[in-house]
Structures are given as structure tokens and as C-alpha cells.
Length: 119
Ligand SMILES: [Zn+2]
Image (cartoon, rainbow, N blue to C red; front, side, top):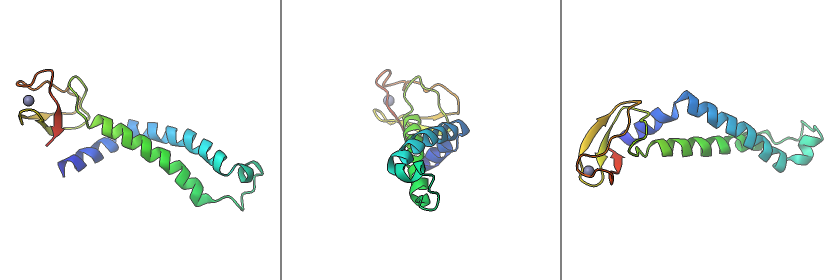
């Protein structure tokens, strides 16, 4: 449950949404041109499949935002945290609290082999 809360907290980051929207605009436009080239180039607005167009923009938005969020949820040592949360060391089960914009520390037991997971 906490993992889901962290996921949505990161997903609501405005910078992440802006970047995902930019990617969706560029990639979605290219894919729409590929998928409906004849209709779009003829400016045949009656026969454009608007649902297909919308979905074509949504797919790159979802892929890019999912990728960004999943990368930010790794909590690698030395990375900056994006949310307040509780982490548990995969190696020794040590639990720590991290706060937004902190540097992810090493586990005092596992040192450079530390791998955190959200508790
Ligand atoms: Zn550890």
C-alpha cells in the first residue's frame, strides 16, 4: 500500500507530467501521422478516428510517466529522493526514513552493496 502511495506521490510531480506531456505530443503526433496519414493529409476531419487519435497520444504519455516513476522508485544510493517514505534494506532489513530532496544513504551494515526497497 505504501508503495502505491509513493508511486502516486511521484506521479503527481509537475515536472514529470510536463515532460510526459511533451513526449506524448511529439510521439503521439508522429504515430497519428503514421496511423492515419491519408485522412490527416487530406484534412478529412469527418473521417478522423478521434478515439484512436486520443489513445495514440495516451500510450506514449503512460509509457514515459510509468518509466520515470519506476526509475524514481528505485532509491539507489546517492540519488535524490522525491518523496518522504520509509525504506528497508534488502540485505539486512534495516529500516530508515528518507525525506523529499535528501540523498539516499548507504545502509550502515551493507555499505556500497545497499539495495533499498519501499517498506
Ligand atoms: Zn543493509
